[in-house]
Length: 241
Image 1 (tube, rainbow, N blue to C red):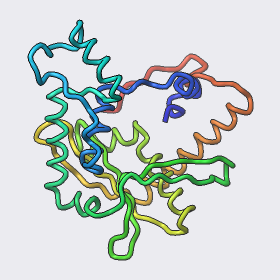
Image 2 (image 1 turned 45 degrees about the horizontal axis):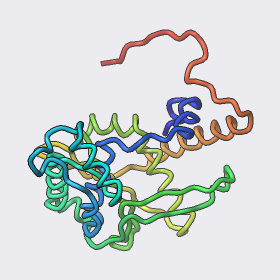
Image 3 (image 1 turned 120 degrees about the horizontal axis):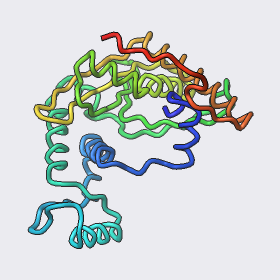
Image 4 (image 1 turned 30 degrees about the horizontal axis):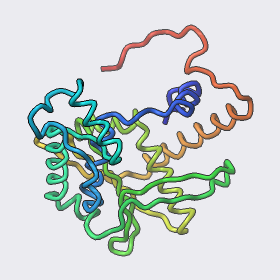
């Protein structure tokens, strides 16, 4: 996904992994609350007792140190409220639960991409079989899960590439084609939710983009040259809207 920005960005973030942000931590715990509810106890709640007002100062430093020793991640009361709200919205949705209830969660796949002679890895949120047809279901939190907004975000963040890779990995490992779904749930009240079926043309575009970026990566590795997105003077253009 960093290669979508540029080879320079890919190389930088490969050498300098991004620390987990509060949003990433919240998303991780929310996933676990929905997909693996038995594993959600290993976080520490900040703001529950007197004196825990702001995330700075001696009280905060001591709290962080204690959590580091116990290997617990910190969340706030507001973040816990959001986790519960998102999880409740998902479990109330019969459309979402059709793909979540009773199927395998967090399934790791490792496969060999013969075209590029590389090992690949993916982690499926959910996978199973409905009416004899295999499926993959991915769960994403979003600011806006409406069709236009989420479609733009999905393209910008490379979700179509990720899902195309997952489908290809599933095919390589099982010899079967699979249907692909995205469950998008908003991270603010009232926690709107939409279940998207990912059509073949979207997955084909994801596969096309994946192969383009993989070829670019192979070229950069072969030459040890990691150029930025633009290497010449470029005209400024305004968005179509």
